[in-house]
Amino acid sequence: LWDSLVNNSPDTILLLKPDSEILFINRPAPGYSREEVVGQLGSSFVEPPYREPLLATIRKAAETGQPQLSEMRDERSGM
Image 1: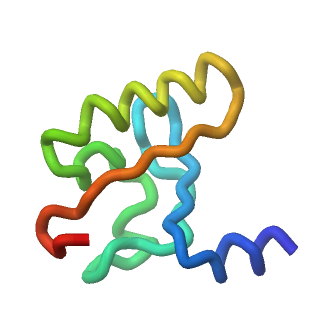
Image 2: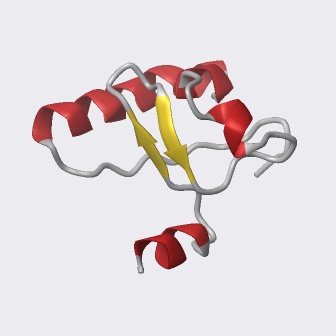
C-alpha cells in the first residue's frame, strides 16, 4: 500500500536526515535518477533562496517528530 501511494503520487515525497541527506525520493527531478539523488544533500538541489527555509522545515520535523510540508519553486523550469 505504501509503495503504491508514494510512487503514484503526483508530488515529490522525500525522507531526509536532519542534515538534509536524502534517504528516499519517489520522484527525482528531471534528468536525475533515484540512484544519483539518494545519499546526496537535498539542500544541494535547491535554489539558494529556498535552502534556509528547507533546512528550517527539516529541523522542525526532527525536533517535533511530525511530518512537515515544504513547497518551493524550481527556478530553472518555472514550476
